Length: 428
View 1 (tube, rainbow, N blue to C red):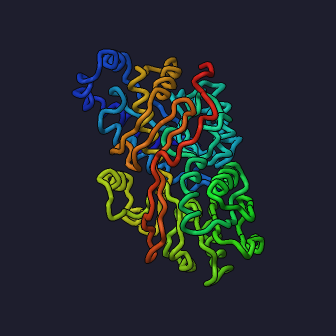
View 2: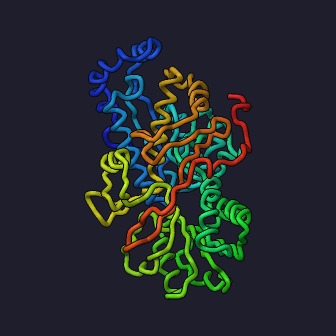
View 3: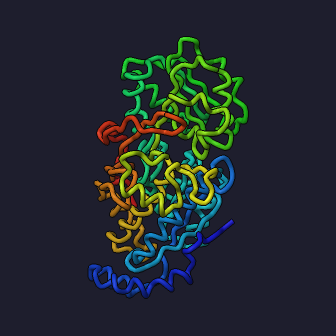
């Protein structure tokens, strides 16, 4: 199903063009020329997980995208042109994902595609984007972009990848929680990234992974897997995704009772889930990786405050209009930041239409530093144009009195690793 995200229709876009005219005079000459050439909107195809196991993420990715587009359009758009977002549901399915990319290029005449989260959908969609020469900006976390698995038309400039995340987390886990680890993860590409890269990272710290428990992403009950956890496990590392995450964490607590090992989870296991839910009391004192702290911290920045207000999220990370509607706050900032990177790339490439897509790719590849600010509220970042991957700070939080309190922030340098690909050598 196709939909235009609220507030970004063509009629609404054209209404606001007059208000952008004053800002046009401040643009460079080529940009004013481009504006004179066309007031047609910039069309961004939003590949949204509206249904399937990624639906909770897809809903909040949609809200974040709508908020970012409103901010950009209210500020004059991109070279005076408004953004029009065309959303298509991919069902969190790789085959449908490729079909959606095809529709963006051939049916909707989109300038770029954007938004994909689940790694198997990215991997299934990226080849078609490359064939169609449609710039494909993913908001995933998988290492598939930086590994060289994909192509020059696929970029991940708004969210860090699993390899950098676990590399930065492993020293804290080893030094503070234990060295003998059992891992529980979903049995697809995203989970395999955790399995492979955390195993290597914890071994580099002198630790070891005793058991690796892969769980089908569509599983609805988990107790049968827990007896595989070795008794000498010092740290239980968990990352789970999908609609059954609440069941997963509840059953984990029931299995261990009061005598559990130290527990370190990726917030994916609790995204869109209220920590105060009955049965989650055992999480008190456990640790989580967060891409962006769900709860407003004591040293909250003005940028986080503004981002929450724009998206409609309160200090607890839930919808302002419904405190039981918990956001996917650790991930959805990636949509906001990616859209601002797209804006920057389009403006600096002199983009006028699909014939300039190669120029857009080159313009984004030339980017390096993203300072913390309203466009990047999660924190400062470094972009690697060769690998098409961004690197940034990671956060570890502890559950204290039913809230997530940040206890450690990594440096960006903690997350860096040697290049595995140079996409700039591939033809456009």
